[in-house]
Length: 301
Ligand code: GLU
Image 1 (cartoon, rainbow, N blue to C red):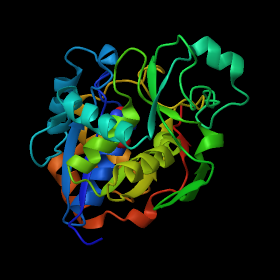
Image 2 (spheres, rainbow, N blue to C red):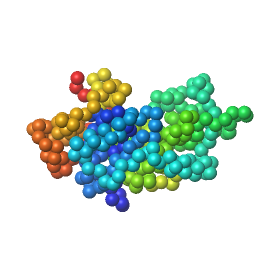
Image 3 (cartoon, rainbow, N blue to C red):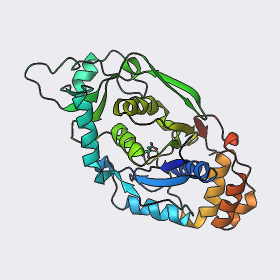
Image 4 (cartoon, helix red, strand yellow):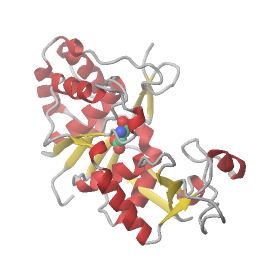
């Protein structure tokens, strides 16, 4: 990498931090810090109806109490709508973006197969122009039938044929909101991020993000997709699966648990000590090569 390492942690303020998000924060933080890199925090509050009042501040307070130190001010995606609109204009002018009139039901009726992320692959109905008398609801980015691939530092080579595996995807939703895929790509470029370390639940989104980076002429990033923590039933920890909020009183113990989850041989005694001692140990001993190369790890009951 030519420029200095610049990584980030990008939580969505849909609820308090839980163990799953802590793993992503710890992994991205230590990967950055042990390479003398910068580490930024970005609040991904672009999907405004999903934001929970107070969650953003609660997340920042928890990160602070756990001893994370971020560089520069926190970027809020809810303040970035102009930048997202500009990016859409550029794509429109380049003929890469088109209006789509399809309702969910129409897509359900016309789709031929399931997309890689479990939705339906968009069959391209409005690609050649809107049917007569129809209005654009959403805006979609054209993709192609070729392979979009990258080498993940943990998961190895990941490849998708976007046209088949996903279809032209939405950058501006029918409710007028900007899509996560657009916001993340525009902001990573604008903040000069060059290394992404995040949960493997986002692995299937990465080829779409790379495609969009190329359409916008942005530089390429490196990726490491960490194993995702799942409950004994195999469900990713999240608000939906009622993952417990992290408790600030247990900060050292939770950090030790996150380091263990990431394959680090941290002494158990540090769980009963001070947060600063855990970070001192981690700063010296963090070994990226010890991080498990799985995409999902079940936590014991
Ligand atoms: N905001 C996303 C999430 O909380 C993370 C996006 C990213 O790291 O690219 O799942």
